[in-house]
Image (tube, rainbow, N blue to C red):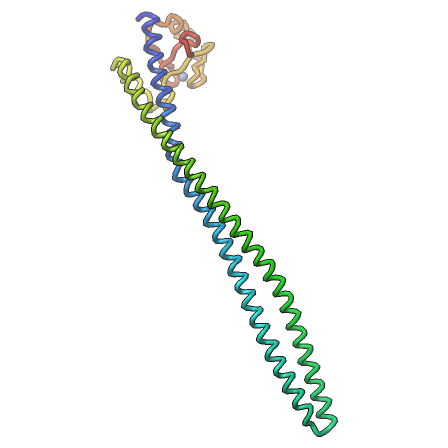
Length: 244
Ligand SMILES: [Zn+2]
């Protein structure tokens, strides 16, 4: 075989290899699309859950506030009743007891009122948290829609590119003779997508091992298809091809 024939063959194989590498990388990007989309959905769900938690905390606080309110009303009613009783007592001892009762009730009342103030502050904070969580969720939902449009566009581009690569592949394969193609396909399971490798300064660039001197000399003549004795890759001398 003349070196120019061999050059042509190796170049065709390298084109095929490049095509397959690009195809594999696009396929893996395409396969990643559902994961990217579901990640966005998960993030939105998390924001919604956080908002729901803030809302539920706010409604708990509002419920507590209403309970305190009805507590103060019932204390107030008791105070009024005690005041009425005070007007009808006969002895000083009963009068003192009645005063004490009212004082106790007022202390109780003031304690509940303190709690109501604390509760109002907490409600303000909870309202702010709900508003901020809602804001985050809405902003993210907007970004997510834009991201989805972008992802859809990328997917469509990748699919189109894959079709192009497929058509190119058919062309490339059409120009490779069947024995060589068979050799390439048979080697691929052992080597992965890189089936053809340059040999640079006696070292196979596919496996980084040294080529024996005799084979290296033969490789320089470049008149016969050789494979690396270590990794089985089809080898060619570095610098002999336009792109390699
Ligand atoms: Zn090798």
